[in-house]
Amino acid sequence: MDTMQYHLYKVLEAFADSIIIVMQILTILMVCYYLFLSAVGILRRSRGTLRRDPEKTFAVVVAAHNEEMVIGPLLENLKALEYPDELYDIYVVADNCTDHTAEIARAWGVTVHERQDQTNRGKGYALEWLFDRIFAQDKSYDAVVIFDADNLVKKDFLSVMNGRLLDGCRIVQGYLDAKNPYDTWVTNSFAISFWMGNRMMQLARHHMKLSSILSGTGMCISYPLLREMGWGAHSLSEDLEFTARALMRGVKTQWAHDAVVYDEKPLKFKQSWRQRKRWAQGHWDVAGTYIWPLFLKGIREKKWAYIDIAIDLCKPHIVLVSAVNFALTILDALLGEGVMTTTIVTNALPGYFWWVVIALILFVFPVLSFLRDKLPWRSYLGLLPWWYPVFMYAWIPILVAGFVHRDRREWSHTEHSRSLNYGDIVQEESV
Image (cartoon, rainbow, N blue to C red; front, side, top):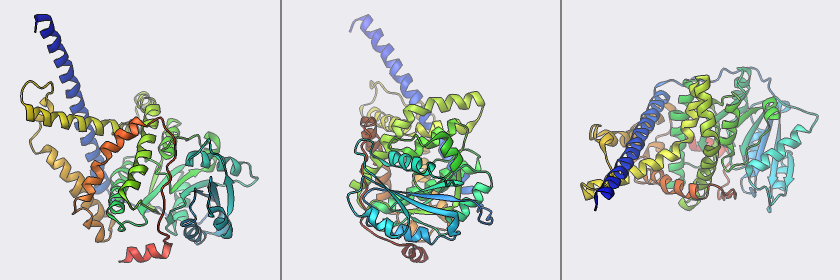
């Protein structure tokens, strides 16, 4: 190697080392920030919504695609909510259905709109189509509440949302629980991740007066706001997209820890892979559009709420950077000197730092979170076997696949195999 080649090599090596150091610093800052958020969610007490006399009116919207197995129990549940019948109406959009979803829904006496559009497919398009039809009616409402067809809803859901609207909230996300948390190791892992997210992320943001994030179901949106700004969310993560769109207009998503909706989780890992890959595709799509506008808006207005959501949109980037950094660190340890990596930042930390982080994320914080929410004893058992860590680390290849296919917007339908009713949920929670 001549002198010029040697100097070029050293420049490239220094450049690569600089990039890796930046990656390590960003990873550590992100980890510390989310540990802080988690601690806030766990330590701060959750106060219930102040209940008020029923006053607000609701258009309860259900998005359905080939949901004949689950639509009936949900509509039975919704018609029995502890809220005056005259203050809410139920609408079902039967989107590109080829089964008996529409007929079953009509048998429950709700308003059904059937949509056939093979070009603009997906929940986002279906919701926008239905909203336009509702807006065209003579009747208006105070808010729109959105559920998926496989959900069940705690009977005081609308009462809680009534209170939050009377408090001045314009967008509210309810607590997302699992309808079938103990069916398989996959449903159990899904449930654990949602239970943790509810308290350690959503509730923490509520306590810090930041914006929570819509979760696709259990969403309550002010009718005037929705009519003013339109739905306009067509990505595969339409909930995240609408959260970002509203926040760009200065409207935060509020959190209602006591408004509970039960969501059916996929039974098999392959099903969960497809669903999470769709979420990842949508996340990459929304991140590419909103990270910098939100970040710059937060800087200009000196408001952390915008920066916080911009950081959340960066999570897939940081997860993949962390995985690459970990792989390079292992490679460096195996091959010794001469490898074009550096662990200068991670070496500056105590040797047990990452083991403590892993223990906090996978075991300590979940247990504390479950204790705070008074979850049943069976909830803790899922933390003991191998499956929850496997489920979580599977996010790494899922995020890679989502990035590769981020421009695709084909909607993948999650099949349902169980038809539970609200009484089954009440009985399950009492065990």
